[in-house]
Length: 371
Ligand code: GTP
Ligand code: MG
Image (cartoon, rainbow, N blue to C red; front, side, top):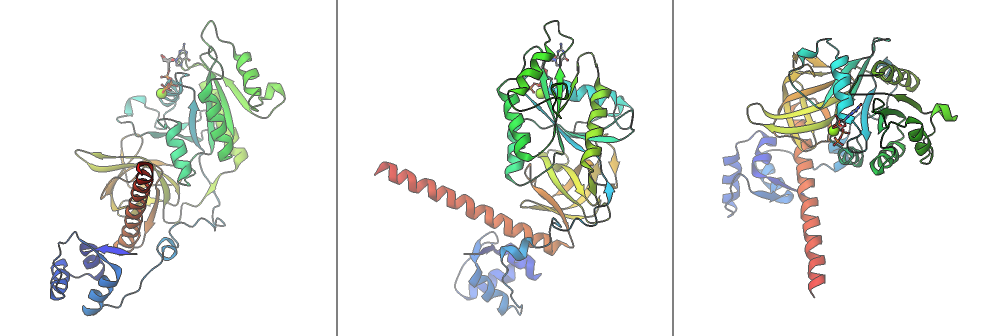
């Protein structure tokens, strides 16, 4: 059954928690502000305090948070969001670093003061921006997909030319295919004397990745992150693929996005790196992500600069959450704090119920094992 903390109940009625506690005391129950009471008791208290109670279902709480069905207003072109994947040590980080330092949007490599896990790069020929997400690994990608978060438009599959297709290469191919995301192959480390790019293409064929020179449609680019060879070409191929995908959005609506990573920073409090996907996120917006809420206190760009707003495909650090949300949580802007509290307290409650259910489930199976 539904339950609510005394603090939360008081908040929702704009009453003082002590008055709620006093009311409960009258009924012979001693409570602390953090105690959880059941929905029936909460309703009784609320009605005694002169409030009308409307119990809401999950569908009511989540209703209208994300405008996922109606995309008829998505008419603006947006930058592609790219995730780099591949086998361990094949050069994912090196490639991302090389791309970032070669073509950072602001043009000044020295301007990068902090690493936010996602950033934009300028494609030199077309002048178009590309958003890269620096995921820590496949696990994060899987977790995001499991939460229904779709952040990636294109996967750049890095394969070291001296090592060839390896287990995690195959894993990445399967991830991309399952998500229905097109692959661009970056055959890396071509500077190495034992590089065999042709062998990579043949091995890819065995996993149903057919590059153009083999009559397929998958684009491959031979690169060297070390020597910065062909990086512009890789960016151009990404821009081209983006054009084919015809990515659209609407910046004129309340923001929707996905949390890429989040942490509790000693000085700054909860900090979340968010990829804005639709709409525009602004300082002062009231936001929810997972079971956390807040008011945007500051937005920090991938250049480490404070900005007032962030539009579609733009990654930003968001300050102002009450607690750090989780990677893969979807962010939404809501009308007011009451709505934010309704959504997050409902989700927090669900989370506790799920956790309790899985613990009692575990206990059950343990007991079965012991008997
Ligand atoms: P994990 O994050 O551990 O999975 O590795 P990664 O894929 O990010 O590889 P990383 O960029 O850390 O590179 C692994 C090693 O390969 C490092 O020693 C790099 O210096 C080297 N390396 C990366 N790119 C190149 C390249 O183009 N040429 C050569 N010769 N070495 C490279
Ligand atoms: Mg790495």
